[in-house]
Image (cartoon, rainbow, N blue to C red; front, side):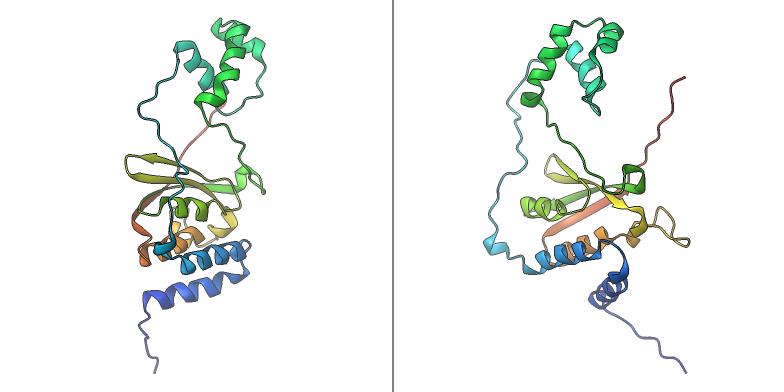
Length: 208
């Protein structure tokens, strides 16, 4: 006769981590989990990684907005086609590019396995330890980015599909991912007050 055992949440998490030891990238997540275990709220000092400038304004006209959208995902575009497309002078474009670091954050994202091999997720956190959470998830092998809306911290992250998908796992089953296990630890220890998440859905079609 078989006995059905009831396991605690901690036991389930521990067993899940043990099962994940053979999956690529697990060592990194174990390192992150260790940081969570060693976190002491008494030693936390805010660093102000994300800075908001609500009272500041910048010179930004309709042409700047067009150029921003044109260069948003690729700063290496040739200028001549853009000048012809929008009838904007080369001087204005060079001025926009020169001032861009003052007005925007420019960074190059890193995907060691190539961008198509990752799935994208958006997390929303409530926390009193914002900078610790940012530093923790910044250890991910790809390039996550963070932003704030009111008092909510958002994390946009990519996960290797090998860590998410299998023949029996649906794309929508985010609970199979390493990151939620880490989030569970953060919630359990009170580092996060709450969290919500969603798969980022997007599409692209070729212009004919």
